[in-house]
Structure formats: structure tokens, C-alpha cells
Length: 133
Length: 97
Picture 1 (tube, rainbow over the protein chains, first blue to last red):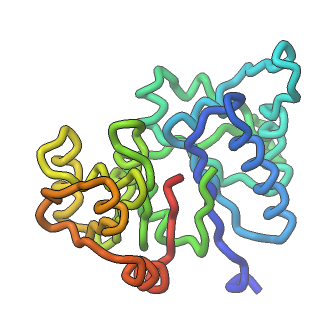
Picture 2 (tube, each protein chain N blue to C red):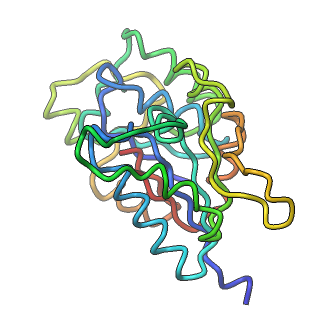
């Protein structure tokens, strides 16, 4: 029943690759999605760097996870939000964001949704749980 | 809703980011190195004073004492571990780690 579905928000506030937080967070999201949870993800602060298009970790010798973000929508995680202020503080624009999937009908690429900071607090208040990565 | 901040606001932006997302009526608990943000007369004092206008701000007494912090910003409620437990019991929690 719909009312039994847990609303779980992930906040991603750390930069990718310098630590394992963002990677581990992604693993947890995919696991939680398998349990029919209502997942939303908010990228803010240095977390917005994880959504930058064109990441290439080959020379670091680690498997990149940007490609996994490219199929988030296939895992039914489409509520992916990015804080506009955090992006602007770091010189990023919507054009820098990677694709997280494509529209089933039109095959148009889907990108994370840019939101204003004052939208984040009310979204947090709606959640059953908030996990920080 | 309870937001907990355990990082010094002079070290990184966690406290500022938290305060940007606080809803009216929310509670914010400063603990561990987060309590450095509770002191009056610093470059971060105004941020807390602004937050106090529509939210409750708490600081954990054990962490204040351990760091010899006095001159706490008026309006901040100093709480002990039992008060911390009550806050967690009464609220959804977001730990700004």
C-alpha cells in the first residue's frame, strides 16, 4: 500500500573520489530502491561535483560511478535534486550536469532537477529518514 | 525536526549549510566540534543569531565544558546527554555529518 512506502532522503555533501562516501552512498541508494522505498537524493555543497558530466577515473585506477548515475532512472530513482547555490558557488551551471537516464516515451535525456535552497528544508520535513553521505 | 552539527564552523561549511535548510520550528543541536559555533563574538555568531529567530538552537554541555567555551550566544539552550536523548526521541533527525 502506498502509505506504507517509506520516504527516504539521501543528502550528498562530499566531493567524489577523494573519499569513498559518495560511492558508498550510491550503493546504499540502489539497495534501498530494491525495497520499494520512495527515494530522493539531494546533492549540495561539494556533493554537486559528483554530478559533473565527463568524469574519467581511468588514470586513478578506480571504477568510476558516474556511469551508474546514468541509469538511476532505470532503478526508479528519478527524484534527484541539486542545490543551485552550491552549484553557483562552485562555478557550475545546469549545462555541467550529467544525464541520469532517459524519458521512457520520448527518449529525451533526463538531468538532475535544480532546486533552490529554501525548497530543501520542507522536502526534508516530509521524510521518514534522512541519510547523509 | 532535529538537525545535529558536529563540525566546527571555522573548519568547514556544514553549520552554514544546515542553517540554510532549517525550517521554522526546527531544532538544531551543536555537539562535538560543532559547539565552537555556539560562542558569541565570533565571525559565525550572526548566523546562529539569525537562526534563533525562528528555530531552537541547543549546545551540548559536555562538549562546551571540555573545550572551556563560555559566553554562549544568548538564546542557545545548553543541554546535557539526557536532553539530547529527549530531542532525538521527539524529532526526526538529520545528522549533518
